[in-house]
Length: 398
Image (cartoon, rainbow, N blue to C red; front, top):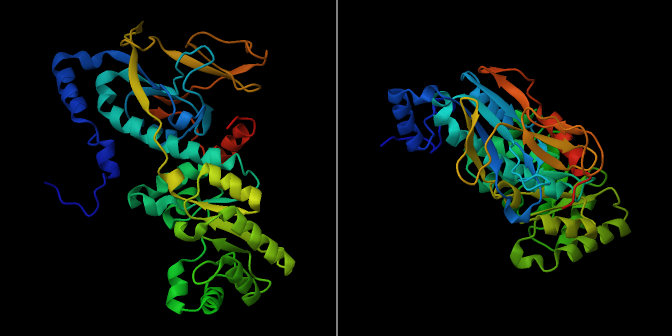
């Protein structure tokens, strides 16, 4: 039995293949003894269907996958980080989001972590994108770290941010993204002060002036009253008030938001924005936005998003097409029309000149990221990946 400070694997253990399922480790032993590991294969990554009846997903985790496979004698073709894909193309053929090509013995133990890197991240990014596409002009902050294991906080923040969120709350996640962490204040500060006004003034006097003054306004009194108290206490310096009302006191939250917004405007606090957090979902964010909320802190519904269930399957051995039952053999390319976002999967050597749906020009989505173990592409920054996602979701259905 091994004693650890946290029950997490180190970067080194992941890179050594220790997070694999044991049957891959045993298989590698067999491959080494029999010589079967020298066979060259193409292993593609596909998803049979998406959770929650999603019609599309945002692929993320590819940057980590590229780094995982760097140094192995393999080639990797993968979709760009943040690519919108569907599990099947317009003709019902599964859409591979990438494939690994090389001697099977070289990478067989990395199948488990390779899938894990894209499965969870893609689920988080997709949930984030679906939220963002409904409130494109309003900020959403990732608040989900407290609901998940702290070791994966940076991954969760990356995935949510690339999926379209505007900011993240954890210090380490913000460092990874190269942005400033965003947050307000906890209820504990107000409870310790036993006076909302004193707590707000203390926060204002101590915290860096560049940090927006978004004051928590639901701890001891009615949301409307605390919002007005906060706006008056720090008049001219309040960027917004945050409503984090517990479920037992919520009642009709959109009506509360309407009331707060109205009363702030009546008293001249037009510049004080209303932010909402606490148990928010794709549906509730839309309702609250329509009611007048101007920003959101979203946690569990995104950080605990269902994984996208990718599978890894051999589709070619020593340049000959082969596949298990239920899968289509052969190395493939995926084409997407940028005009109508239709998809077509073809054998890798085939080129598509015209979109069958609209006559547009389809583009290949699988590009080479690794050649012989060497990264041959520029890894995107999170900002570049996020802009790519936002550019795509503008014309997508929910």
